[in-house]
Image 1: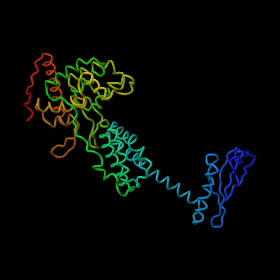
Image 2 (image 1 turned 120 degrees about the vertical axis):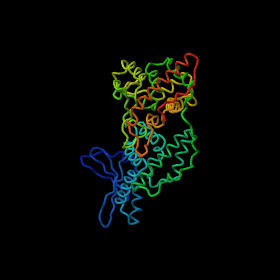
Image 3 (image 1 turned 60 degrees about the vertical axis):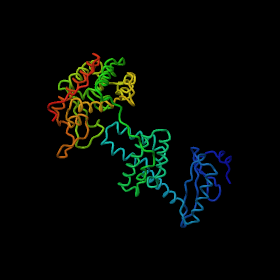
Image 4 (image 1 turned 90 degrees about the vertical axis):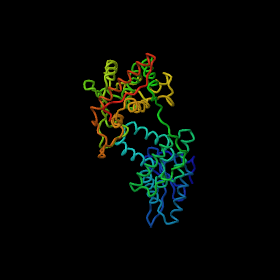
Amino acid sequence: MLTDTKIKALKPREKPFKVSDSGGLFILVNPNGSKYWRMKYRWLGKEKLLAVGVYPKVSLANARKVRDEAKEQLANSIDPSLYRQHQKAKRELEAENSFAAIAREWHERQSTTWAAITARRIWAILENDILPYLGKRPIAELQTFELVGCLNRIVDRGALETAHKARQVMNQVCRFAKQTGRLEHNPASDLVGAIPPQKVSHMAAITTPAEFGRLLVDIERYQGTHIIRTALALAPLLFQRPGELCGMEWSEIDLEQGFWTIPREKKKERNQTEGDHIVPLCKQAQALLRDIQPLTGHGKYVFPNQRNHEKAITREALNKALRNLGYDTRHQQCAHGFRASARTMLDEQLGLRIEWIEHQLAHKVKDALGNAYNRTKHLPERIDMMQRWADYLDSLKRQTVAGNVVSGEFRSSVSA
């Protein structure tokens, strides 16, 4: 019988040699000093060897435990070596069909249709809130209560919005697994009502001319960096999504023609029929861009991050600037709220056609024939609209500075 003391005392020789324990278990000592556990047994009249492990990673006690399990399998007419092969194959199959593996496959396929920021946001939810708890589980074995438990962890830390997004991601991953034949029943389909309902909230936005005029004047007086001040000044003029404005690249700007072309890949909502999004640049926007071009025009981004010029500023930088100006970004005005401000006042104050506004917001608009968004649709009208909007904002600033803000109707004669 072997002991740990005896095993440790075994010295390597010129050729491999083995020392028996009991029940067919022995340790093989190689010339390089490595020691391997092996078990000799007979199956259907033939002598076979079972690899047990490497000493000392597999201790003497654990080696004997494996031996005893193998003997029990033999007593039940099971070949230990074949059983181990089946178990290994099962683990590999489970790994291929784990929630993590399928989630990665789903994300890789879907991300080709998403904007980069959307792909990163969804992967962050998977990586931080879902995979640590469900990733290793075979997706076919997942139960609804496990998904609920994962969601409750998110709810308990106060991230209700993230919990609802995580529920949507779980459902889409499981639905993909079902569609590809790796799941019979979608356990995420019963998650409706499992977590508290999400409160509907709108992006904070100022929509009254007098208040908006004061905001524009405050932006002009912003004491922060020139990069942030310029981005903040362009936000109400162009009213595109903050992430797109912050990530604006010089290669997308044509100051001669007066256009900013946002590549399709950057858009939040897009499909295979949509192209790039054209944003007409009013004279005021062109002046702002020409002013900052000597400062950042040598790089990729119009608004590079101050610490790392290989990255652009973030939407939070704009929101922070608004807070520094004294605006509550949760209840008064946030960077994304400039879109709502523009939509409301273009309609109510300038009386412009809704379809022009919606196209300029890059919302999905269908015409009478059901055709989807066309990047050049109403382009001449949108060019005129963007200039009229910029001139209107200038008038609001002048009235604010003069101390006599007049909220008037500016309805277009061509809006009918």
